Structures are given as C-alpha cells and as structure tokens.
Image 1 (cartoon, rainbow, N blue to C red):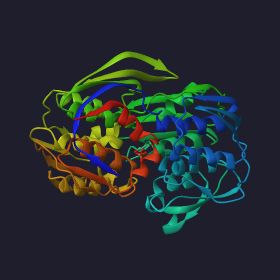
Image 2 (cartoon, rainbow, N blue to C red; image 1 turned 90 degrees about the vertical axis):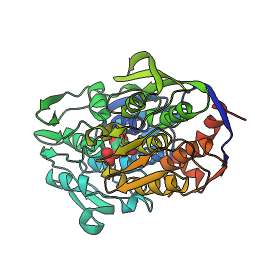
Image 3 (cartoon, rainbow, N blue to C red; image 1 turned 60 degrees about the vertical axis):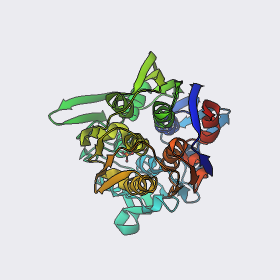
Image 4 (cartoon, rainbow, N blue to C red; image 1 turned 135 degrees about the horizontal axis):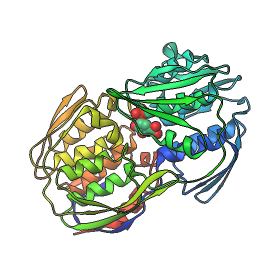
Length: 432
Ligand code: S3P
C-alpha cells in the first residue's frame, strides 16, 4: 500500500472499534459463566474471532448479530474438542484459554500461526502445571502446539514477574475451579480487565496492597453469573489517531467512548507529559470500566521524554506509535524496561528501530528498549511490517507525516485488531 505524505489536517469525530482485551474476556467469561451473556459492541477482528471459534469448538452456543453476541454459558462444562484448537495470531487467546482448558478433564491441543508458534508459553504452562494440570508441547511446553489435560486443580501463590495480564487472567480463571485460594503477585499492576469483569460477573476477589507490588487473591469454587457487557472503544487503536492529530500540521479530533482504565492509558498520560493538547471529556463508567471521550488538538511542539520500566505495562501495545511521536519531538527520548516487546506479534524493538532508521530518524537499539533523537521531518520509505498489525498502523501514521512516499508491505495485517483502519483514517484526514 502506498501512502503519500501530503497531510493537511485531521478533523471530525471517530469511534474506533471496541477494546480487544475486553472483547476476548467477554467471550471467555460469558462461556465459563452460568446462564446467558450478552456482549454489546463486540470487536469483530481476527484475534477475537479466534477466541470465539475456540469456544464454539468446545461446544458453546454463541450467536452473532451485528456487533452483538449472545453466549449460552456452560458453567465450565465444556465438550472435548474433536480437532486441534487454533489461536491463530492471538497470544491472548492461547494463554488465557489454556487456563480454561486446564480446568477440563478432557484432552485438547492448542496451536497458532507461524508467529504465535514462536512465542513463549512456559510463563503460563509452568504455573498451570503447578496447579495440577498436565500440559506438554514443543520445547518442553514452551512453544505451541501445546496439549492439555486438566481438572483437579489446586490454588497456588504465583509471582507474575513480567506483570503479564495474560498470565494473570489465565491463572485467575483456572483458580475459579481450583481447590483453595489462588494468589498472584505482580511487580506492577498489569491491565486489570479480568479482575473487573470477574467482579462484574459476581465473583469476589481481594486486592492487597503489597510492598513493591500488587497482590490479588481469588477463592476457588465461585460461580459466575452471565451478564450484559458493553465493550468500549480500544485505547490501543485510538492511539494511532491521537498521535496523528498531535503531529499533524493542523486539526482537532474527538475520539469517542474510549476505555481510559489507568492500567491502559499510559500512552495518553505520556503524550500530555510531552506537551500535547489532549483532554478527557464526559468521563463515566460502563460495565465496571472507566470510559471518556478524548479531545485532541494539533499545533503544540512536543518535547522528548523518558519511559521508565514501571510505566511500560500501562502502554505496552502503544510503544510502536509512541516511538513515531518521539521521532518527531524535540530532543532525546528513551524507553527502558520493555524487553517484552521482543516477544510480541513481532520483535517490536527491532521493527521500530529498523523502520524509523529507514525513515531517517536517529535511533539507538537497546536490549530492553531504544533511544531516539527527534528530527524535524521523517522521509518516506519501504516499511517492513513483519506481519504485525501495530507496526503496520504506526508506520502508516509515520508515512502520512513524512516527506515523499511510504510503502507498507502487508497492510492486511491490520485485520488482527482493526479491520477498518484505513477506511477510518480516510474519514478524518484532509490532504494538500
Ligand atoms: C493483553 C496483555 C498484554 C498485551 C496484549 C493483550 C491482554 O500482553 O500486550 O496485547 O489482553 O491480556 P502480556 O500479558 O503478555 O503483557
């Protein structure tokens, strides 16, 4: 796909597609709960469809009508799947669903696409084994395909050293069916949608403030009750438009109904720290999650900034687009403590560094991040997405702001999280 850097301004309003993390969890909790769950404004993308199809393969009745799902909860009584389960490109599907499979006495195998089959799984396989499930897979269980035979679980105390929400969610869901209490300690609170949604579905959890961390406790044997869940707009998708607006020559954009959960909005706080003109309006709570409309304006000069390791979980998926903003800000910016980016849908540190350098930015690669010296203007180039949706969208934004032409090698990969990205983009930009 060819992008020309002739951006004049950004304007209008946009309701970006619903949050991917919440859409996955609405299907998962709806399926394990008792009774009916209705999901409103569900994100229909390749990743979330992988979760939906996985639960269908376990015998769950799920009806889709437009953006609404009706799920007949199975109260943890699933059927043995007759074939291998496919998480496709979705780490969230693979890791959280392993927690569900670990509660089931039957045999199942879960796999994924070429990218997911290279990503580490031991972080969830090990604690699930400790809870009593039998899991095996390539590289001693670290790589998909992974087989699971579960049941008879017991609660464990687990230190989630990477502050991974996927790991935490997997163990909490398995913990619902375990004997005793499941305790998870993480150094920094990772996205807490599972805790919020478990509470919304009637479970009780205890959060204990800990010296240097965050502890969550869940008593086993609790049943969930089906609910009506509303999915707000995804802050990780809205981030591309927010960045484009703050960097555009002129304009103003209203991003509607965006999830502003404090475990997810670090990117927006960082932009404000850089000097961006951005505010939350009409703040409210929907299905247990904070939501706001975000008004963003262009025209301010942005300054370079540091991202510290403890801030990384609140903006982990936004770092590719934040790097583009950093490359066009005054002075030096730095991201540290983000080694996890190397095992996302692609090695995102490598992808950011390679593409930004090709666009003329000065970037130093670090094992756990990067240092960027801002430039006045980027130049168009051939962008390598590595099949990674967030790299494709971040560098489309960079291309719109660059001099000359930018070529995106695999634009279709945006289907993973944001199928109508290019259409939405066309609806808010004006060219010279
Ligand atoms: C997610 C958690 C994060 C994030 C991913 C979605 C989730 O991954 O990067 O896109 O929905 O729980 P980790 O749990 O590996 O940090």
